[in-house]
Length: 537
Image 1 (tube, helix red, strand yellow):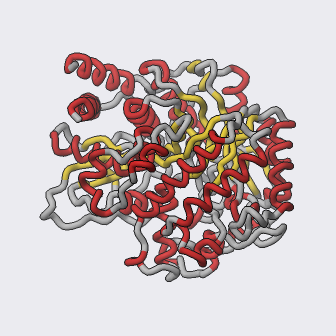
Image 2 (tube, one colour):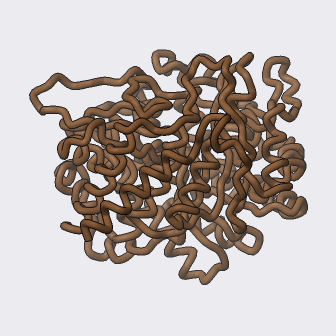
Image 3 (cartoon, rainbow, N blue to C red):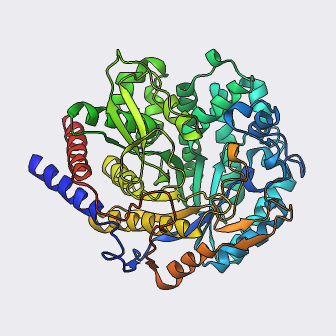
C-alpha cells in the first residue's frame, strides 16, 4: 500500500511538472479527450436585467444591493444588475455567439424570483416560465446542449422576509418544491442540471453582505447552518428528480480552492487537508457518502447541526456528478493556537475562505501565486494552472465520480492584453487534459466563465470575464467578439488545446516552467499523507 502511494505521488508530481513548459519545450497543441464537452456560461442575475419587470419579484440579491450600504465592501454602483447585459431581451444574440464559436454546451441559470416571484408553486409567473422555454428552445435550435442551474443566489426576497431564507429549515421544502416545478416544466428539453451554484459562496459571502447591509445581525447568522440547510435542499431536489423518473443527470456546482501544504511537515499537510475538507468536502462528502467528513465533524461539529439517520440515507449518493467552479489554488500552513489571528485583505474569495473555516484556529491560509507561493491577495490576473490540476486530482481521489468543470476563466480590466486570457485558457485546459491522461480522471466537460462580460458583484463591470465583450460604457450593450475568442474556434475545429504563452508584457511571472523541486516534494508528500490518512480512517 505505502509503495503504491509513493508511486502515485511521484507520478502526480511528474505530471504537474510537465503540464506547461517554456516556449522551447512543450509548445505543441495538445489533443482533447474525445468525449470532453466544451461550453460557456452565463447566470440570470448577472446578465438578464429586467429586474422588476415581466412579473419578476425582488430577489434577495436585488434587495441587499439596493440598500446602498455595501460601499466598504467595494460595491460602487449597486444598480448595475438592474439592466446588466439585458439578456432578457437579447438572449438570442448571446446564444448566437455561442453557436458562432462552436461551443457544445450553453450553461445558464433560472431566476427563482422570476419563475416563482412569491416563492409559491401555486402562483407561478407564467411570463417568466415562458421566457425560459423560449431561451431553452433557442439553445436547442442552435444545436447546443442546455445546462441549467436551478438556483444561482437569487431567491425571492419574500423568503427572507418570511423566515430568513437559508437560516431556516423551511427553505429546504421551498427549494424542493421550486426545483420539482422546474424539473417537471423543462426536463423534456433539459437533461443536464445543477441544483445550486456555489453553496459555500452563497452561505459565506452573501451572509457577509446581509450583515454589512444591516439586514441581519452578525450573531443571528450562522454560515454552517446555512450550509447544512442548503446541502439538504440539494438532496431533496435530487430525490424529487429521481422519484419522477425524469431523464438526465443532476449535480451541484461547488466553488473549490484546493490547498497544498506550505512545507513537507506533517502539521502543514494535516492543516491543508482539514482546510480542503471544510472548504469543499463539507458540501461534497455528504451528498456522496451521507455525512460530513470526519475531520469536519471533529473540528466544527459543535458549531453545525447534525444530520439525522433518515437525512444521511437521503443524502448518500445524491448526485450524478461532481461539478466544480475552479479559479485559484491555496497554500496552508499549520498555525499554533497561541499566535494572533490572521485576516486576509478583503475580497469575495477571502470572505468565503474565512467563513468556511470558522472555528478552526490552526489553519493559516494564503492564496497560491503562479509558482505556488503564499500570497495574501487573491490572484485575479494570474496564470496558475496547478489550481485546475490539483482540484481535479483531489476531487477524483476523494469521490471517484465524473467531474464537470462548470466554471473557469480569468477577468481582465480595460487595456489589459488579451494574450493573457489566451495563455490562461491554454494553461488550464492543458492541466485538465493532463489530469485525464495521466490519472484517468473522468472529466465530462469544461465550461468557460463567461460567455459575455457580466456584472461581477463588487467589481461591477470593471472585471471582464467574457469571451465576448458587452458595451457597458456607452450603454448600447452591443456584443462583440474579443481577439481571444478565436481560441475556442480552434478548440472546436481541431479538438486540440492550442499553445499560448503568457505575454512578456504582463507583470505576473510566467507559470510556463517546470515546478521547483520544493513544489514537487510538497506534492508527493501531501498526496501520500492524504491517501494514508484516508486509508487509516
